[in-house]
Length: 314
Image 1: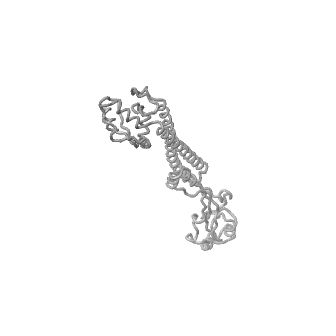
Image 2 (image 1 turned 90 degrees about the vertical axis):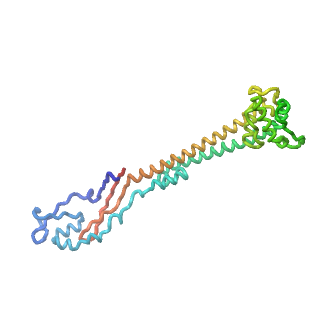
Image 3 (image 1 turned 90 degrees about the horizontal axis):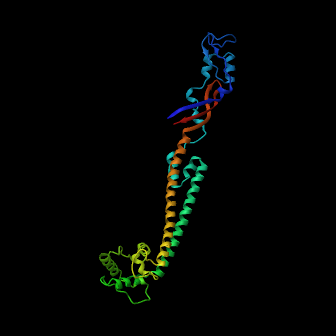
């Protein structure tokens, strides 16, 4: 609600207090002397007050004044120092584009700050996401050249004779992942896992994200690397290529983590900009300055006195 309103009338400030004239019997203004009868205040209009002091009767003066319903209201001549800003619209604009709500509210520096932050965050996200994509292509190519599901299947067939046999296509012109029956491979993995308790995962088909993750994460897939020691399986017996591949893949994940963090900050920037835009618009609406003209009826028509007002609401 509005808790304070300060109004300053320029005429009251610029003009000193004027004496009031008394109406003599018969309705005439006295030429001299002290006022002893009913008091009529001065209007503040020099021409009007001079005419009244010259002898015009109060009745004549009143009859000549315009009716109150013919005086234009202050609203028709008022000029607002600040137009109203909708907090809801400001918030909605900043939710779509950080800084837009601040621009709408006239807070240009904050608008530029939020917008610059948004541009920097999106730029960083795109850069790191692109780096992650390139790194992913690198480690996948590295794996396709150095890890073979055929070698992995041969190791299962050789060192685990009790497991179901995995049939391997003899056509070496085919890529390794097309030479193995994946259903037989997974059945053998489950059999070895149940009997020896050394297999904990079943390899997904080539090309899937889990395929590339597992072959560089668990020691059971070490036999598929072209430089592997296949004498036994343990976490401390992984090949150099296994280790290098894990580092390549980890670097890609780091890039994607950075991109994800930046995207989270983008969301936070939207939220903060939305809240700040609504607050800025509401704050500007609480402090409202106006200048205008105050209408006053006189013998010569309507006289407008300059006014200024400041309204503070909470």
